[in-house]
Length: 93
Image (cartoon, rainbow, N blue to C red; front, side, top):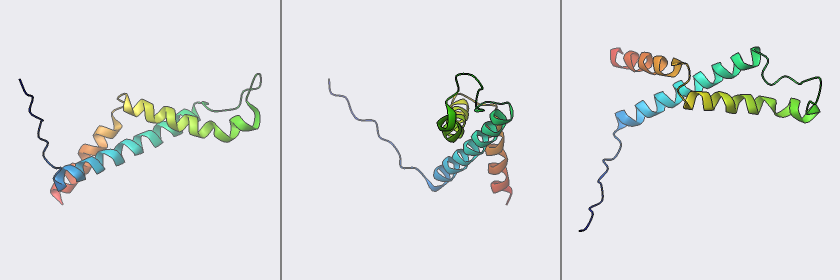
């Protein structure tokens, strides 16, 4: 028995635009979450057993990566709400 390859249709311009809108919405949610995590104290230098200057310099990268992972795992739903609002605005406009 020979398997036939699954044909994939090329992305239409609407699909590409939706993908770009979704990526922008997810990036915005990740940035929002990173700021919320910073406000909550994540990434601040600890008094005892801290990483010193290196930790201070790179903690923002860690917080941003954690926020991106939170969005990838479902996040707060903010990205989906933003995506739908942007898509609706595009249809109306």
